[in-house]
Each structure stands twice: as C-alpha cells, then as structure tokens.
Image (cartoon, rainbow, N blue to C red):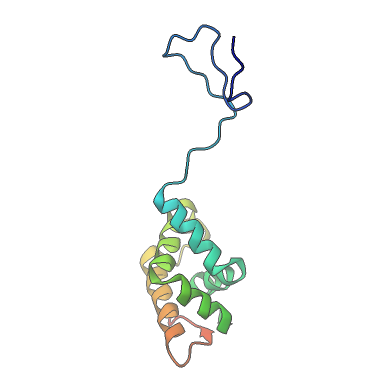
Length: 128
C-alpha cells in the first residue's frame, strides 16, 4: 500500500470503496467571506478599541480616544455594523444587558460612528 500523503490529516479505510471516508484531525474548512470580513474588522478595530466601543454602547461609558475613532473610521461603518450584529447573534446579550436591545445598540453605535467624523470626535458618548 502506498504511503498516505495526508497522514495525520485524514484516515482512509484499508479497503476504500470510494464511499467510505473517515476524517480525523482534518484542517477546518476555510472561512466564508463573512467570517473573513469579521476577522478583518476585529483586527482593524483592535481589542482595546473594541472594548471601549462595547462599553460606550452597552454601559454608557465615555471613552476619550482619538486613536479608537481613527481605527473605527478606517474599519468603516459596515464593519462596525456587522460586528455589532454578530455580537448579538453569538452572545446572550438579552441576559447580560437587558436594557439594551439590538435597535438601541445600533442607534448608539451609529451615534458613536458619526461623532468620530465630527469636531467632537474625541469622545465616545452615545446619547441616551
């Protein structure tokens, strides 16, 4: 029997009929376009700024940050919106932040993004 070029990546049955295929420890499937976009967004906004944005949206905390505004602008509105949508899809936000629904979070996020373009762009301070 010839050596398996995928050894360690896949296990083939001894008598392979063309239908039986067992996978073990195979590489994960490639990320789809949306997943890649979200990963790039996370990278552009960065962890520190992402935390400041999160706190401004969900906890009403003001974060004075010129660099975070710059990162948010570079990432873009679509990036910001999609990360917020993804957060609500994957986390139990209703339990953790019962007073902030998706529409409220969208509104606050849009206000923050808009303020980053304004002369007062040095503070994340969503309106009530």
